[in-house]
Image 1 (cartoon, rainbow, N blue to C red):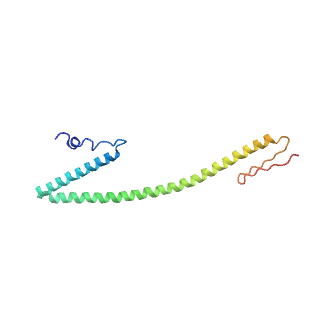
Image 2: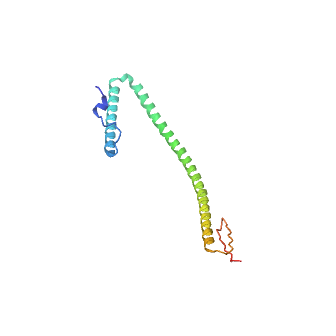
Image 3: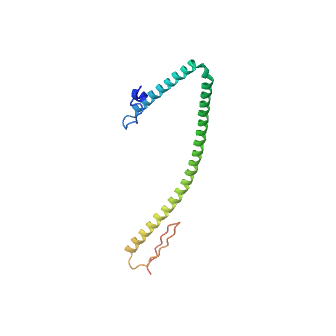
Length: 146
């Protein structure tokens, strides 16, 4: 049998195309079910034809199940660790976001005050202007001409 499974189902193992996602999922499901049926058939054949190897087959199946359970436990533990790390990063990112927002708000307020200062200086000629640039309160005071 030249080619095996790929010769029988050439599109089953190919990468999905952009517009054909549902078809590729269906093909993968069909291929998976065919592989499971073949595995069951081979397993039953070995179980019934070779009774001397039944203990070995039972041990292999038990070891495979144990490995599956252990991998599921490790997967859950890794997911929990990654989730905790992401939560920590998210909280640090929120703190950083607040700090950057405060810096940007302060810079914007200073820019507005500079713009207001230039505007007032352009309109009031001959007047003495004093500006008090307070970072927190953002106050601009205008003192009458001398």
